[in-house]
Amino acid sequence: METKNILHDIAKRCDGDIYLGVVGPVRSGKSSFIKRFMEMAVIPYIEDKDAKLRAIDELPQSGKGKMIMTVEPKFIPNQAVEMLMDENFKVNVRLVDCVGYVIEGAKGYQDDQGIRYVKTPWYLESIPFDQAAKVGTKKVIQDHSTIGIVITSDGSICDIPGANYNEATDSIVEELLDIDKPFIIIINTKDVNSSACKKEYERLTAKYDVPVLSMDVTNMEEPQIVSLLKDALYEFKISEVRIEVPKWLAMMSNSHWLKQTLDTSLKESLQSIKKFKDVERIGDTISEYDFVDKAYLTGIDTTTSSATLKIEEREGLYNEILEEIIGDKGFDQATFLTFIQELVDIKKEYEGFSNAIRMVKQTGYGYAIPKLDEIELSDPEIIKQGPRYGMKLVSKAGTTYMIKVDIESTFEPIIGSREQAEAFIEYLNSSGNDKQAIFDCDVFGRKLGDLIEEGMYIKLNAIPENASLRLHDILSKIVNKGKSNVIAIVL
Image 1 (cartoon, helix red, strand yellow):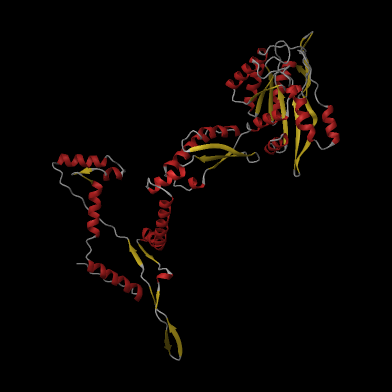
Image 2 (cartoon, helix red, strand yellow; image 1 turned 120 degrees about the vertical axis):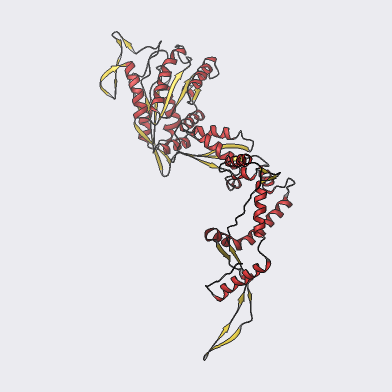
């Protein structure tokens, strides 16, 4: 990813404005960072020649040693410069060089009368240097920045020990955490592999949940700029996470254990998401499940504050789930094809009855409309009606009528004493609304559910065959003759 691309993404998130507030202790390299950042990431993309020259002229001067160079906050460039990202999108870029927090060993913040007074854009009168640093840091980040850059050091860039930066750095970070804007921390060092740099890196990463990068800001290269901007982008808050799963998994029933496990893990993980970077952490968590091969971030939409997390299943999971659903451990392609063909045949058969079943459930009465290929046609005949002629075509088809009948079956076992009967009833009542527990109850060596089903079956088979035939004839006459009156005598 190029610098221009990442700036484009940040600008989309910030409504076209990229204002970097650079804060930190004095003598940490803030001005050096701004100068190098402008030279590498901003000035090359300024289209207007005059604006480019002004930006170059307004670059800050960095110094060496313990002497403080920045004694008042500065906007660099003084007016935000316009950068062309693409044909239809321009962004405004500006950095703010803030007065640094005072640290022991630095020079230039005191004069003969004590703490030096400096001018700021926020007060008409001059204020003490240390107050200007605190007020400026808050004002710059809160009112004039979209992203904060905290610059500190391990002590290698001048003769001030690294430990002298710690207190000021911590105060600044705590202030930025309260303001609640995205920011990153940069350790300015001459040697990223030095023990001092590694120690400070470990201290900051252990103490704060904020990206920390180590680099020599004076010699910062484009890959490092891209890295720090990407980290800053990932610090923005996120409002939506889109989850991409295999289509077959998305189509599974919500009651299936795999779907439930995935849904539960996602709900638990999503509760901890606040920033873009948290989505990557969720990917690591989801990847720990044995049915997941990997989960990773596939896209970030900064304009909508949304991200997309893709989940890929491990190899062989699809076939395992098919075996589970089909119930055939010897699953292969031939078995699967046979199973699918059976399902297709069942589906075709069921389609003719689905509407009837739905009607029965709603009204207690339903019928299946015959299909065209089930209809038999008689030979057409000429008919005469007065002086006019016509034709007669008779169609016949068997259809299915469904009637909902409430069956009542009574189970009356003789258990023994009254106390035994009461104990059995109390046991059944203790199951509450769990009917399955009642059905699984053992009665005389058999499950209660089996006994109830047996009673229902006896009732269903109690209708004699001649009565069934009469019901068939009666219903046929009602339908075909249009009779609405029925007299039934049941003996």
